[in-house]
Length: 513
Image (cartoon, rainbow, N blue to C red):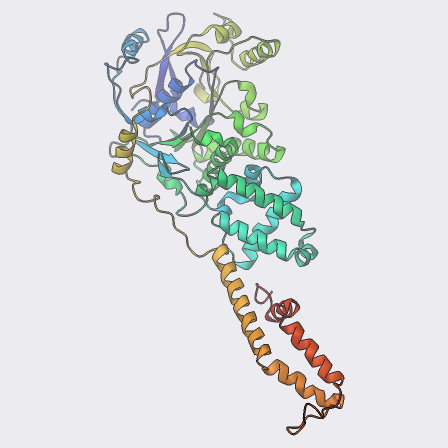
């Protein structure tokens, strides 16, 4: 097995082989370029190369084109004919058509196996980012997570969080003494954001069975790494959900995978398409977290490749950590475009044979300005590279082909049926039902002259009222203080105030608090 992934031909006549060294593939990368310049094909051939080297891949299919990785290309395909000529031009003697091992995933469960996580695993920081909460609202969310831990209320899906927020609102006054101001307005705002997320289809992301990371890091019987494709064409309608899910997945990999140092090849390669969505309007705390993950996750054997239209979309602190670069054409129509093009060119190690800035402006479709890490992790000299053709089908598979592939895969049936076990919603509902039932029983006893009434009747003797069996209504003396008090208490016990009193005696919805 080769130590490099063949990328294409470089140099003036494209005769010089350009490759990505597997040993340095976990030091991250960037695929950039304007729309229609060939970023998707570059992503496709990189996924094929990693898979052939036994490295699992996770990528998002924003346009629906990458599903073709599951099917072999053919010479008869209208787009594959010129590929044979290109392979010969760049000296790709081993070029052959073949399919790749693929698993389809989908947050909505339509075009792939469902992908779920729990509210608890998502955590308050990422959830606040997903819901676009203010600082005060994020504080309420942190209180909810704290109460979940302290009270043993698992937060698995949206209805668990919604139920807990309702309880927090009902007990805002007492909780404010412990955690600071708990505003019902903030709780209402969070509930509205949860409703928006639910309407966007985001409720399907939260629940069980939750995704196991090991299922993303599999190999087929031939030792080829599994290519995990997340259907994202529909998901792009909710860009916040898309970006937050991928960031959560990256964070989970960082937290759960062990340290491996500098492996001979990555354990997993993660492609983050439409990367600008991650950083747009993101709070500094979130950008700092991404930077930390990008800096440290390579020691876990994970390579992260950001895909975007312009390198300027990625913050400089993160851009500086992306060692392997594939720069497709950038257009310079405005002064701002020219400035960004110049800045992009300055990040490469210069080649004395041509101007990097002019090359970025002039490269054609399927061609890129590339720079790969070389020995000891030193950036390579920039080259104009003609990207090799893919071996799998260029373009999407049909719905029938996708469905058949999913039914025959290892993940068939594992995540398809949701699991709704006992969690915060069910626990709170059971407590509320029990409290309501006990309150109703207490009211019935009060109406029937039960122990509560007898106690008050017994107290009438101390008020000077004489009660005997022979006492006639017509001859009874005027009601005394005790009798008046009894009537008032009975009335209150059978009214709204009485129900509140009984709930207070029973300890409310949370027993023992």
